[in-house]
Length: 87
Length: 218
Image (cartoon, rainbow over all chains, first blue to last red; front, top):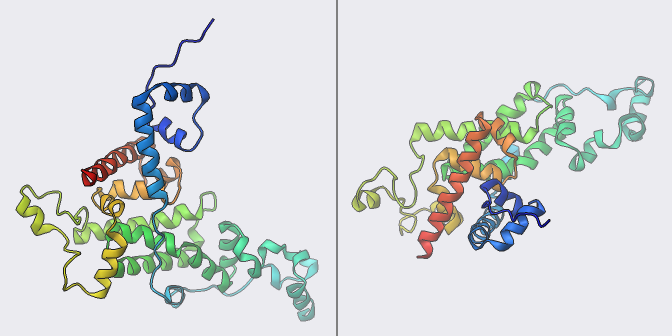
């Protein structure tokens, strides 16, 4: 017996799964046959790519030093001050 | 005893484990670096700042759209996080904790300064074209300072302008999901929102972004 084709349109979650290559095969089959879902999914994938390619901006030079000047560092302790017998 | 300690420091791998040593911080997990910082190793503090300065600054910059302000907020965030490592719960990702503090700082600032969705295209509360023009940010203004010029270059692209038009809570969600790659569950924890609300915000934000980007093409 031939299985009934899945005619439900993809949900937003499923579109995201598809863009990540994680959509189950049964739903993938629906996508292959549905122009509306393909158009939606294509638009979403383009948006995901645009967002993922956004620049990682850097703060001004010397940021680490400016932060470190205001951080209270506890007195050093820990394994590398222990003897072998302590480990 | 001093001699033994010195030997352990030099030949430390057996006693300490490679991942525990400051020299190996680059490949260590955030949790391990935090442990080192708690033990008082300055290199570990620096490593945490280096790992997160760009992601945290980028989130804040896109939230407040002002370089100087974003840098101040990023500094505040790191100082708060690094001076409060004792209260960090290692059950959760370190990145979730730092983004939570950064996002709260941005939201507080937006509330204070009413920068929220004031975009390049004018306030969303403006009801007439004149009001839109009056409230729009003039990034192409010839009198702008070098810093403003830099901001215009960095945030002037179509996708950046579309992000700027989102409500702050939508903006946080979309940046954490699609730029930083956090799961819905992590975003819910970072923003202290129900999971369903996060999903709704992200879906609405994506619809709005697609709409804004389509408007610009027409």
